[in-house]
Image 1 (cartoon, one colour):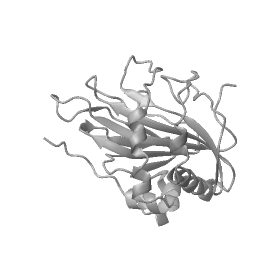
Image 2: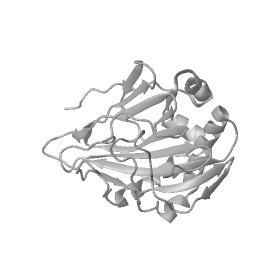
Image 3: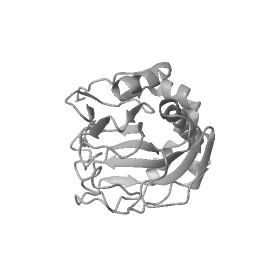
Image 4: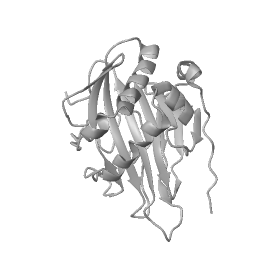
Length: 249
């Protein structure tokens, strides 16, 4: 049985900056994703197999074994995308109550993936969005390919709950969604009760967030069929920050 889901409110690339200024978030569909980044569907889909090779996340403090991930950093300035030296992913406890204050050293994104033109196109495209909102400058980007699976019965895309990331812009792109139910995205005003909820279903649709203005979370996923565990939800999370990467003082 298919579980009913709420469709996301789609914004066209032409109105993306306006939507982000007005409400602090926007959702683009796959066609908009391609137009914004200049990467065609075939080039984007060529990245998908790399999600099958993500190593387990060994830092989950809730004891779970449902997340796999990699992590790499880049500096984006205009069309130029430069890899940054590998570093730990770090957030303060104010932004991540579960894993804040912890240096998490994940395996880097595979070099063959980073070398794909679609990879640089994504980072440069969303970097241009950042510059249109905040002014042209270098953007310090952390890239997180993530797989949440249901092998243990349940998977939690955001085990830390509703949160901000401590950056300027967050992009959550859905890469694949197979044999799961749940995974509803929720976005709320950081300083008020207003919010929206929906479920990303289409591969290469994406949620874009002005991190200073909103908080976000995604509800747990479960197997679509309890007799067939092992479904998964794959995403690519990109965070853009001015001035430098987050790190311990």
